[in-house]
Image 1 (cartoon, rainbow, N blue to C red):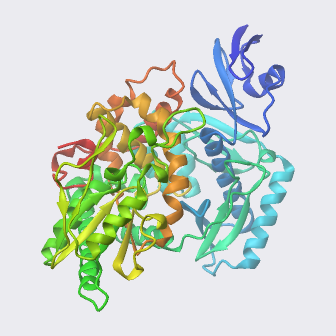
Image 2 (image 1 turned 180 degrees about the vertical axis):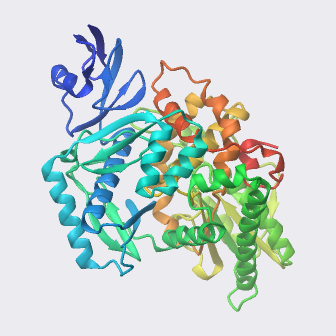
Image 3 (image 1 turned 120 degrees about the horizontal axis):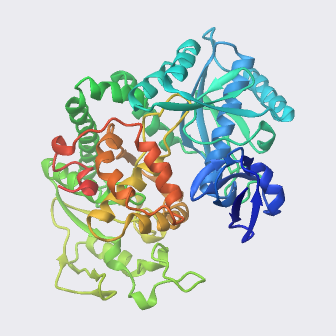
Length: 551
């Protein structure tokens, strides 16, 4: 017998060895408002079919939890793939990237004809049939060579390249009926769990819609993001040209001695984009309605600081004289900072910035006046005036960087013709394989963990603990304004994970297994294990990556 402690009900029970979590669930009577889809066992995410052979602590998870949502969405992807194979034999499905509160996919039919609404209706009908049948997902843990043989036979060359370069002795894969597939995380027990989803035509592919985080009984609201979609598409075009669409492709290139070339190409692509942005700003500055103000924002760890420095250099190359200021310097004194209901400071709130004063100062600068600008003292929590003065003379242009820079409430009285808005994001362009996308947040989370640790600001555990609060704030204060940008800049780096791996692994391994944050640590360690490491010695000092890895 084994003893299992349930964190949800705060009680312990004894079970026969080999009892599954699904069987335990009914015994613990763990009531949640939404169906439970997975669990954390000793702070490691597991599927409900996981069998217990030793004493464990468990916590049952529903779709509102990030780990539960990942399990649900992975399972939806397999449902979609299975339905595509049944409906259009020989077709190829590419799960490309998250967007519009869903996942954008391409379905290439074997006959090469266009995927149209009639095809979508057939696909959706088959998905519903599979859900009604409540078919089980079966997991197999086998020697990697056996999995490779299975995937070669099925023509999954993307999975073959991934597993061949990962170095694992054993690999697990799943089957749904006669269809097999590989996923780097757990799935729900059966298709009957997948009751909330939708599929719709979107651009030149289809959008797999998923449940809302707040209310998983309904779909997440659709939000059209044409500019973000175009940025993904631009990234994809470059990947196809270079023949690097998946992690397996990148690993093979690195093992083939192309790491230095890939670093140079990644840097060149980013610099090319920065030059284009600078030239557009210069063109508008010299137009009949001169540009005066460049607003720059982006989510946490997107590389705003380094981007601003590199943009300033390119603007100087155009003959302009950029000046910069930050929304952070207009923070209200800490005593006046908005608070959460629990009494803690809400530092991401728009009212953390004295936006009335800041807009007044910006207007004075645009009108040619000299302005004394503050500097925020993060130690004392006070806004101070230390003699810093700015004035927009001939050839000068003002760069303003900060998380609220694109919020219309910050510059509502300033004419749109005087503003140029830039949104920086980190949209990972490659796939793990054709059916496993890389969450865009993981890129920024790893950056933040490494940077915070190296600067002595926060431990990995603290960075992970606060991450969900960061994401929630971004959804409220940053992302609603991204589509208003004049231009978007993607700060994702082609072989970033390969470079970041050497920095992140030892930091992540410092987190103890007996804390709640270890569940995320375990997931991230498993994820970056897929990447062939690259030393950072060839990363230029001016690279966006240096903002996070140092040097």
